[in-house]
Amino acid sequence: ETGVTQSPTHLIKTRGQQVTLRCSSQSGHNTVSWYQQALGQGPQFIFQYYREEENGRGNFPPRFSGLQFPNYSSELNVNALELDDSALYLCASSAGGGNEQYFGPGTRLTVT
Amino acid sequence: GESVGLHLPTLSVQEGDNSIINCAYSNSASDYFIWYKQESGKGPQFIIDIRSNMDKRQGQRVTVLLNKTVKHLSLQIAATQPGDSAVYFCAENNYGQNFVFGPGTRLSVLP
Image 1 (cartoon, rainbow over the protein chains, first blue to last red):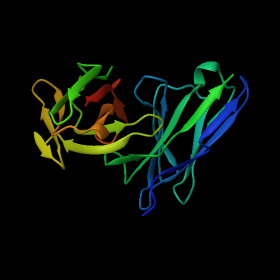
Image 2 (cartoon, rainbow over the protein chains, first blue to last red; image 1 turned 135 degrees about the horizontal axis):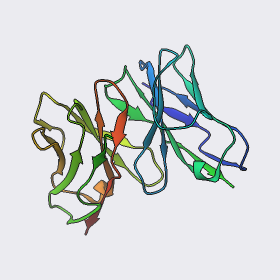
Image 3 (cartoon, each protein chain N blue to C red; image 1 turned 90 degrees about the vertical axis):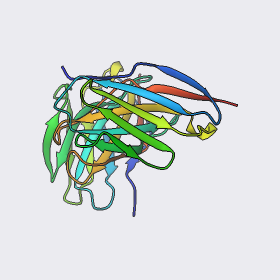
Image 4 (cartoon, rainbow over the protein chains, first blue to last red; image 1 turned 120 degrees about the horizontal axis):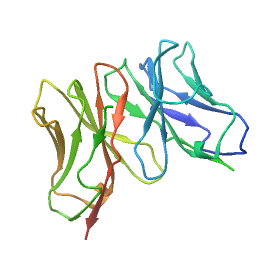
């Protein structure tokens, strides 16, 4: 059984640029959730995808968008990057919402 | 709004002692809770979960207690080891909606 994987592990972008982060869910999981974790804080929910549809969204602006593919892998896109977007971006997968949720190692994004 | 908080931001325990990490939640409708362990530079690691129809659940060296009356959750770690040093988060879920995480408690195990 393959766990949750994310790519890239680290990324440095300039303010105003766009970024795409990728996540492969654990085998058998059809739900992917994305979180932003600022240094020293708990993860903050961005949105969740279930069977390729957005299934809930946290308090993040529209420049945070996502996709889920038929194989349940997912992308997080952030447009017009701001300095405050610097954080660890975590992907978690589960077999439906409200069930055991497992995290990937995260992507560390630095915006300069 | 809904929030999950922790009473103690840092906890230091002697190796071999038991650790208790506490968590308060505000959404009485939350029905599922997970404890996560996060080591530096890594993603959160699932430790144990509990649903609202239970008040206690045990795993290997860990026990989670849920008190719905006062909206309180705790994680007990028996015979704490150096490898238990990490930040611990509780997360609550409301009928399949998103998980809400608290700020975390840093557990330091002293030799």
